[in-house]
Image 1 (cartoon, rainbow, N blue to C red):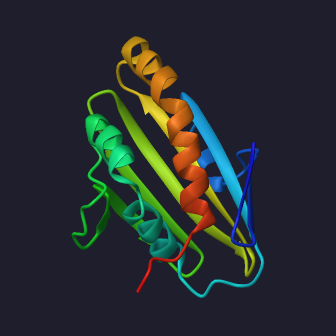
Image 2 (cartoon, rainbow, N blue to C red):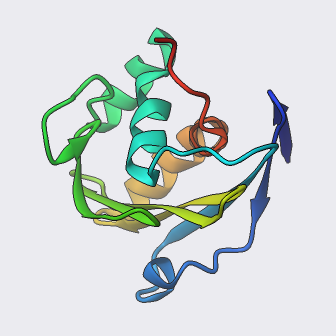
Length: 153
């Protein structure tokens, strides 16, 4: 699964992020973007921009899960709490009825970054069923976020 967009190549990769590997989840994935040139935005900013760029149809779907894609409150991105934010990494977490989610955006090199998602199912049977339906859309969204298209000014 690859995405090419504006000189950026995104592909699914093995989950190797130390935050994601610290505790085994029920589901995990990771995507890597190779950029044609360095992007000066921090991981927090390119993740924030990625969530903000969701089309209305995607925003409706993620709201059903409990995320708030238009939420711009300090300390949060789309309703996910910012646990850590540095020049190299942003770690987001949220707890919903069905699951707890951890997302890690990491600047691996000036032209390489990753986005890793780990889910912990609170209600495993129902969460697996819902994830089976929503997982493919999540993966497309994650690829768009890590591609990090800049917001129009």
